[in-house]
Length: 296
Image (cartoon, rainbow, N blue to C red; front, side, top):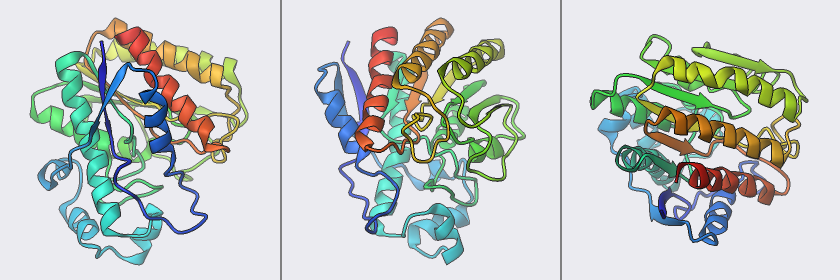
């Protein structure tokens, strides 16, 4: 079966020279997957304000859209404000919403963007403006989807996601992350697994093996997977020592667990800052290839 994936890289994100956000990885990822003939690619629709407001404060939404956020708020986000950033951000959320609809109709869906887990309800942070997974989860709740699990395997804690759902027992938030890493001030997820810096594949996979059964124990109706690849040893911001083979096994474990759960499943890509950036794009591509192999 050919899978439809949603992308945003046609919306150019203007960044100053030497900015450390690797915007080119999104195009590289799509080009890699296009060689496989297992996927089709659809430009992401733009999310609307009312849907975004399911998870975000309206003053913050309008401040960002209108370019009236204060300097401190823009610095926390980490991108200079521009109309192009607004469009790209709306597309990133729209891609996850589209992937969510795809999962509901076909079993799983994917976006070649998203995973912006540092965005809180009323502020952005760490290259994250709006929290796409939180918005999609709230949208599902509007459709009476009662139990949602969010598995976040980015090397950085999903602090914004944890905070948004801190008082919602119907959403299970799991974050497996490096303890000595951004954000400095952690939030409380439903389940946090804090890893010491410099651990390698075996210890990481052992920790993951203890977490995955907890998703099944929760009996979710829907699962989101934030599949950041910044745990690679080559990553500038990761501080772990995972190999590409270790990440591949991580994804196989997650996809097998998703297959057993037999509920709609969405993949977002999250972070990745390897040098060269082609290593990040390859790792992201592997995630989708394994999903196609195991989930169909």
